[in-house]
Image 1: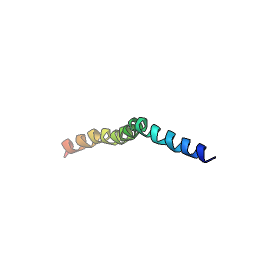
Image 2: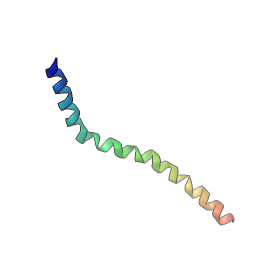
Image 3: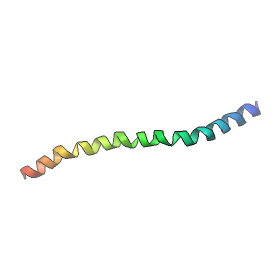
Image 4: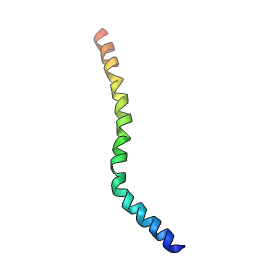
Length: 47
């Protein structure tokens, strides 16, 4: 049983490097908010 836990931990640590890219995907959704900024910029031109 302990061996399974060790293997799981090892697999987790091994998956951490590949997990690097996924985090970059999170910022992508956040970048979608900036896209709403352009419309706001148009409002500034109105002013």
